[in-house]
Length: 312
Ligand SMILES: Nc1ncnc2c1ncn2[C@@H]1O[C@H](COP(=O)(O)OP(=O)(O)OP(=O)(O)O)[C@@H](O)[C@H]1O
Image (cartoon, rainbow, N blue to C red; front, top):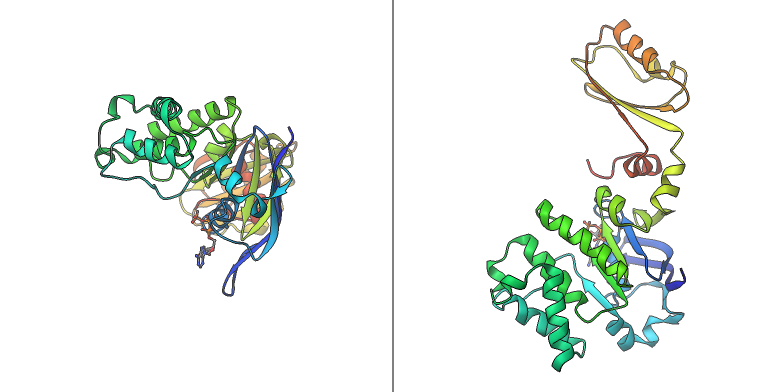
């Protein structure tokens, strides 16, 4: 895949709050690039700068090799933006909203009609086309919002957490429609703090936290680093005397987190030490309520990179 966009050393502060600390990454043509990070990581700020609605303090963004500031008009016609907050006219119908937004990108006549039909089908809203947006559920509004951003067939679609606060059915609809956009040749940038979504749609992932890129790669390559680890979550009736050092005394244990009655233990994969961990607990008189073991996941990748969970 060749590069569609290159982002170099983006820095942004709001007064003394340093929000982006010089981030760099590339966007390859035809991929779904997921930017994964917790609330406040700087995802929306990055998106605002990428969509040229916010300036950066430093850094450079190139679209097909040219600085976007030099081709702002062409660039803006080439992208579709799905903002975090729904931007639709509530008093207008689904169809009127689509007509309005697609016409902003210069579509008219039969091309506009075709684009509107296609976008209504894309959003699964053909039968609700004449209804006012204010009668729609949150999920339907989200789907329409995305349809408004892609009706003009942009080369690059930039989506900022488009599934926050919607029902599972609409979420699934949106995730599968993103795959469809990719199959049609579009490139997608997608920010989220949901790992489950990244697992489903990403071609590549950027993990962000505190305004910095912590890691970049495919989900497989990111997980490769932790393939050699196993994570046990053990819940006991009542934690009495057992502490971190007791677990570290067991061969293979790499990290221990104690949260009330729950122990999270990371261990080297090859070392089968669960029986020894269980013996340790029983020697301390702990009654085990539940044990789960996790395979390598993006959650574990995030935990390893930052020492905390993506969502608590
Ligand atoms: N216009 C602004 N003025 C001042 N501070 C801002 C502004 N926009 C963002 N910030 C701050 O920048 C930091 C990063 O915010 P940003 O919205 O980019 O993060 P995010 O990863 O998108 O999080 P979320 O998922 O909550 O949207 C936060 O501390 C936020 O308060």
